[in-house]
Length: 249
Ligand SMILES: [Fe+2]
Image (cartoon, rainbow, N blue to C red):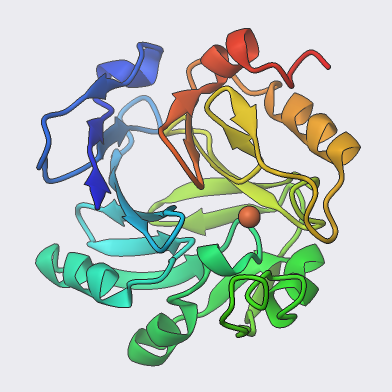
């Protein structure tokens, strides 16, 4: 299943995201430059809701180069491959917000098919590789993946012609991370921050106190940053600052 929404250039200056009609080619159309006369990177973001829960798999593409970043590829690799084929996209890497099984069901297949490297925070390595921590045994299909490279907190990463910042946000898991694209005003929040809620902290390695501290850390971002969570619909930092009950705990 696919949900559709659009972020236009105007939205980048602070307006609320608008719904696009069902069946729209792209979820988000992000046009955000580096200012002045520098060439603007044009990114699109599409979201495929995959797997049993379902989980949001994000496909972030530079429309000029067709390079595509895959965030949290859940089960249903054929849907991801179809999307990549349909858009003539060139996958460049896989980023995981955390190491729970429902966020990485297609990692092994995608690595094998495209020769991709999988990135996750250093603190999350054990989660990816353990059928206990990654919850796959609880889901009834024990399996694990081996990430290839590890992000550090506050690390700045050049990707898709723009730059992302890694924000370590423990609580849902020990090494949960959010990926912030400051120029595009986008935050991929994994299971740390949901629309008016947060992820669970009762799984192995979870911590409610850490999760609340992480949410407060995210509230230092500008109001007009769009939040793209691991489950459910998108929201914004401004909306969560106002309505999320965990922000003021
Ligand atoms: Fe999770």
